[in-house]
Length: 90
View 1 (cartoon, one colour):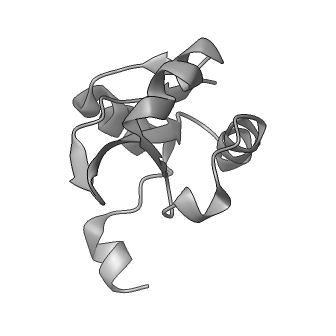
View 2 (spheres, helix red, strand yellow):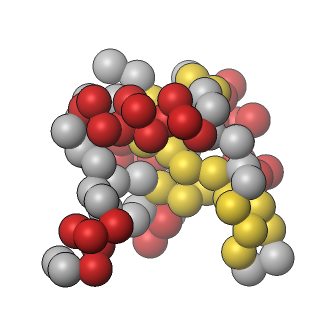
């Protein structure tokens, strides 16, 4: 089991954002996020959106830094991935 964080490349609200995911378990993800003071409102169905300035702190706390492609592959393999279609319909 691992917590993964990708590169902050997604612009929004004047900042760049990264994604924080678990490769196996949402409970593990929520526990890690809570321990690192990531606000619950940052959760979006299968990941947390985290600002660029939080990434080094999350890595220091044990998140594994991966590419965006590796993060998506791990999320799909875990069975936790919520597709764009699922987001639109539910």
